Length: 319
Image (tube, rainbow, N blue to C red):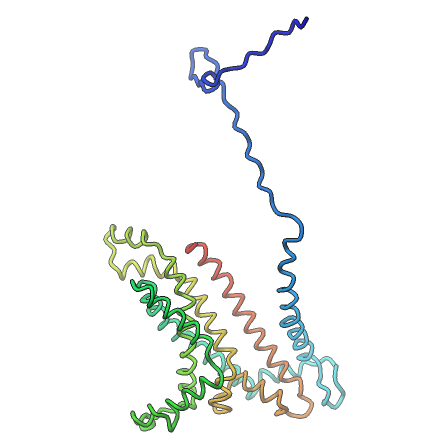
């Protein structure tokens, strides 16, 4: 016979009773702890292996080879190849090569700025358009134009705005000093693909601006200009800067269009690399092209180092 009295089980009503005084005992119902979210284990990361292998072969090995060659002597040097030297690096930032590097930086900075200024209102017009067909058409067209370059683009502008181009002859542009084969002409050609690229870059950010922000500004008496000055542009600033950096990198690395259209009339670092690779350097400076390529890699790394944090910062607001 069991002499132990059974433990009474409180009813749900008693369990939920909470008393602030009077001697009543408060009983708190325990809340079950939610089960921990299970994370997948195993080889989920293996899906990234092909991409990492492709990146290592397509970008890693060439970058290492360029870095090694930029700091070693070439095979045609008097002392033989493979010897450590700084002559290639110092030579790449002197004379005509330094002028070409500054020319590429100037061209990229100017065209990226114009592309950002012109592309922002165009993207805003597209994002606020009521016609879905127009938005899809412009986006598709921008995607095509942003990737259209090289010899076909150069031929199109030569036939249109060249010295014997249709538009040049009809408007008599040469009388006003117009020349397609100059820094100004090359800038106009670059804008042909940079403005669509800016539209593709900034349109998602414009669509991320919430209507509640505009309504709240209007309810507080803010005008459209005040809304963009104090709300819209500060939120879009990281995306705008990121788009500018992306346009800068695209213009800085462009080669085929400039090579087919202006040749050596406009000093650019990409054209100097082509000349160095084709053997148009002094004896013993065969690795000078690798040093010039390393200069471009350094600029590209700096561009990405600026672009990625800006992209993450804009995603916090627009997510």
